[in-house]
Length: 259
Image (tube, rainbow, N blue to C red; front, side, top):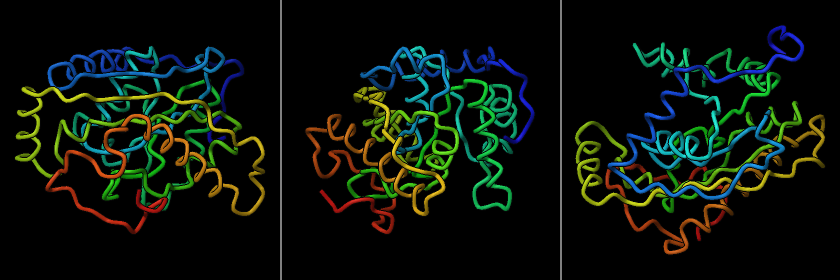
């Protein structure tokens, strides 16, 4: 672990984070109809547990935060270091107890220790194994980064897949203008945003010391998210009904053949 943790220590969500969970629910209500399904087993609710979610747009962190409020969960978010460096936002992120991930920097490896420390005090931790908003033309989960899987294998903490769909209709990808326009439209249409908590991913047969174990675990996590996502978008089995005209597309990190 990265730091010394007192025996029996248990993390409690700060008031700042509890208020933001409530605020996210308030923010979502006028622009979307939030539907939360699935459940987290009672045995996992006391933690530790890792939530692995797909990333479909700039609004989905707000939607998933609101969904956690509905599900009575207070996960600590694994967030890019840029948010922590931003004025005001960075102070709020730290006060809420979230975990800084410095991607593409020399100390990115310390994030594993930081998350492991958070799990050692029975936290719920939530992150995006893809590492970015998906650029897949069908908006399916992309090939994942191995960081979350390495943490799960190292700690033995269960991973719960979280699939979400619809938040991409609320706010567009690029810049202030498109975001304002799509938010304005969402105030009138209130698109349905679905968030589903799935069954834990079975990683019990994987030995973290075996070469390739982290990649196999990552593939299982992405497969589990994808399987849950299929059920959320049955009317859009291959391509999304709503296409964001400013969102870039790429197949370079496609996890599976196009549907």
